[in-house]
Image (cartoon, rainbow, N blue to C red; front, side, top):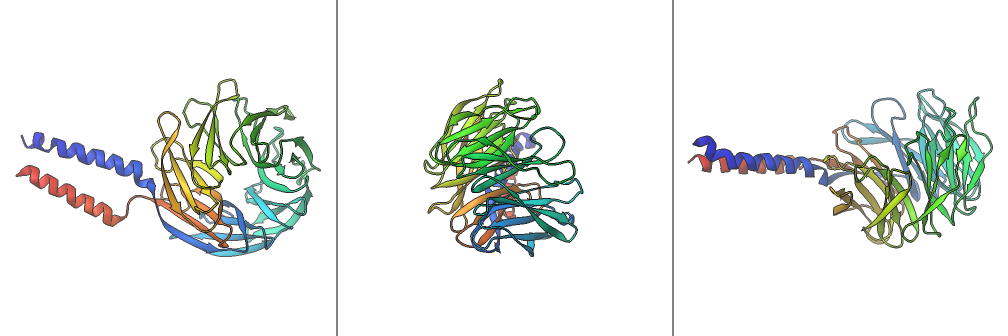
Length: 388
């Protein structure tokens, strides 16, 4: 009889535990604010000094610098190098370009029409080599674009309406750029395998054309682009299997329509249905991760006009997004970085606040211990009452 009387309480406690696990990631409460140089825009992360802690690099457009912060235990960072760039430092990417085990950095210099490459070494980053691009290089991504085993660069060149391709050479470095014609004002760029052929396809948002361009990867290059309508002034791109059908789907942030367009992948490698999800004012970047660890991918979006916050949209069973939660950040948030900075198993967020000259790290965690204690006390009280 006692077990029967306690059964409803046990069920409640089990359900409560599931709720805590499902929504523990809703708590982006603890933050670290890091001062950087003027007008921070792009942010990347990695273990630059091979000490087991995640580090940050931030491009600062007005001061022509990249600021490096080294991660420390206990949710702390220490300021490292300040790297001189070209004029209008903007897009940033990191990867081991040379295969020496150290992460390197690539930054776009908008007004110099170049990208700068910094070689990772034990002491940080050394040297700077510039490579020419088309006019106004904006964002950059790193991948093996032609399947030759070497890393290459794809750079959106905003005023040239092209994508500059810099192919890695056998002796190191990059060959002079070639280009692909894009839409009007190419902005964001990503690589994804949309058709399952194990070749990267090139994804580009066109700010003034209001389109997403897809260049299908082929042996040694790319096929003619296919354009998909999205919202007004698209910027960021995120890739994930949101409806869990085995096909890659694409999320695009639309700066002027205040929404995220999600285009769902099809078995033939094309993009099909499009669904739009409202966010805050002036969404700039979008990233994807399973923030609440429920097995579904979620979205984080920086709202850069007026709202000065980050929206989290939680993945739903039908492949859509709901349960939006907004978190205040600094003035004019731009770029986002989703990584588990403190190693606790929950994906955290980094955000650049371009008008505050700061970077914020928002830590994702379970509810505070005081909250858990109150819940435990309440549960014990329920059990005692049931026993009487």
